[in-house]
Length: 328
Image (cartoon, rainbow, N blue to C red; front, side, top):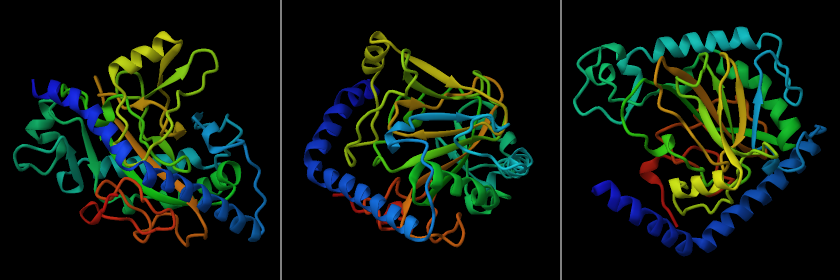
């Protein structure tokens, strides 16, 4: 009953936010576009020559890159798979211990064990995901970014790029009802924010793959125009059915460890609750930057789960904690 009431009033509330913050949202989108142009000018002035693979960032939609480097628009370094092995082994070890993790949904009682697999809530399928706290300390991540980010700068943005957020988490086998990122949504971010998702385990349809809606004719992801500050952009079942009736299809992205997705998070997408096994991923949230960072991953500019989803000011590079966020 309570969830039914929420489902009725949530769209109304988001519509109210969209009207209330319409002017501010328009200003945010304009600021991000202006900042990107400035970042492109700075990049060229430093002697870099872009070789863009897209005419605009909207054209990225969802791009899957095979870990063997068969996709030509982003070149993967020769030791990419060995590096992914290092990263995945480190993440696997760290996500095994309660002290390193946050849990979603939150645990109802304080953990009584050191190992995640010993927790009753995990064994009973009451946890959808475990999230890594120490995202800055992932073995090999800066090394990976040192190759990958310049490729994205040159081929996608035509500017320096800031790794704004890093999210590292594991989808567990669970019977909990799908919610938040596990339901259809778009992230409602400015166009200039893109994400890279890297599978750290082999991913099949049964262990929680990334899924998105795409046109069955063009194979392009179904895009929603962002209106920042009007909620996280949940897409109702009725809307999804409408897309499917008009010729869209859902696509689950599977692949071996190291499979990489570059995507616009305003494409309608969702995570899936694992049915068997688990899925480890690392997600990089990217945006343009007017200067080259000394280190791609740093506490000075890289945030994670405990930080605001995105900065309203594109020239603000330091991560903002959720406690200090001021909306409007």
